[in-house]
Amino acid sequence: MDILKMKMMQTSVKGTYENGRLFLEEPLPIPYGKVIVTVVEDADIVSSSANKPKRRFGSMKGSVTLPDDFNEPLG
Image (cartoon, rainbow, N blue to C red; front, side):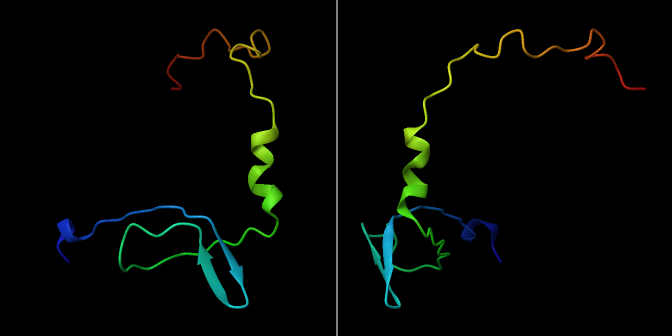
């Protein structure tokens, strides 16, 4: 197979599965293609990460130490 014809595209679209049918919230950007469906049982799982406070840069300063010979060859 010609490597130029082997294009791989991944895109995510939210939707709902009900009674054997899949309803997408927006159209796919291609007319035809193979799909992989991942089922999320609880909608709260998807949005739970948005509710967590963001970490501040430098909040772990002084908690991690490296030995003096960290960059030395292993030999």
